[in-house]
Length: 321
Image (cartoon, rainbow, N blue to C red):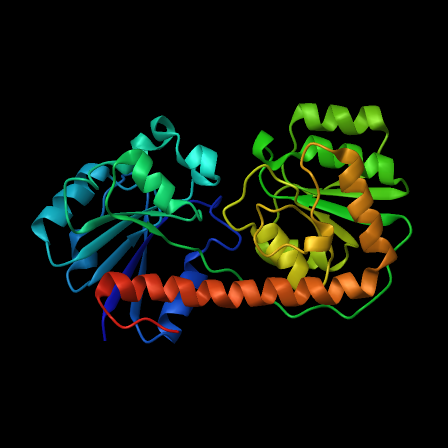
């Protein structure tokens, strides 16, 4: 049995689906011996951690790049993967922006046993942009969830926005769309910026602020929602949409979320179109709920297979079909 080591940040902010317990379970179910270690502020990796390891997956940029180079040089038969979770690499355009990615690249060009992993779908473009021959798409598995019992939408409609609060999430246009939709109660599961709160105040939208929620509370909140909005400029996978859709919450999204409902895909810069897709979901609620669950559930299952297959590829083992 081969051993896989997961290096993760020792940080309370590293919550939600990108968690070591999910990664470890997927790999253990696939027959690997898995150990998880947290890298703290010292940025040092205990060399004893990797003594019997075949593959080291570094999911944290806080690990010392110099030490990783040193360990890879001293252990040429072990495979190291530095996995970047940055939003910079989440679209074809930004994947080609080499300047923003250079800090995470370190010595991939120099050592044959270090790979550069990305959670985005554009790793081939990224590899070309950076001149990196060993770039691999490393999808992060997510939670498999059971859909809630079917119910009709509430009055007022309860709509949720979650995830990080930054410009790449396109929250402003989605909030304007909610104003156009009318009769909406907005729920924010994030730490909103002052600008976002000012817009909500100007539009006089009823809002409930939940802050950044632990994952169990986030799922509880989602089950109470009628609609989820995730019309982002860029996404690597979009766990917000995945989890909402698996619960049967129709989710307004766009083409950057590969598993999104084609009938609920909206233009990112058009609040009117976002509003129209939301109205369609409300008018066809049961149909959209059922379709959302199947699309997202199938995507998460495939992502688990893809994650294991990349491990098998790196270890030179036959891949799952």
